[in-house]
Length: 141
Image (cartoon, rainbow, N blue to C red):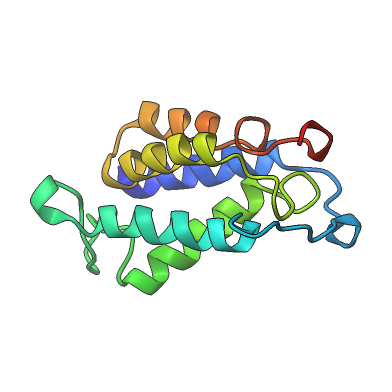
């Protein structure tokens, strides 16, 4: 079930992100104190995978059986980082464009989805973590 959930989530991400992604048009304008896109991607993957490993909270934890999506923390972090990179293309979520409070909501949803086998948790995470919700237009700053 868990593997099917993540496959569905990955498919939804891929379908939702088809289009041009010309990162060369992105300006790296991170102000002091702002987290870069890359730092946020690393942060969310670490947070989600830390939660995935929390077996005391009922999360799957790492392993190689059919009940485990990830064998290692590195596998988990790589997968979540890839997904976050797809959800937050550099053209829409360049450095300095990730809204702190919206990111916090997204991170909480990602942690819930990492621990859950629930389809609705995955959909809620996709919605809360979309570029439309998390990234701000530089003109709004």
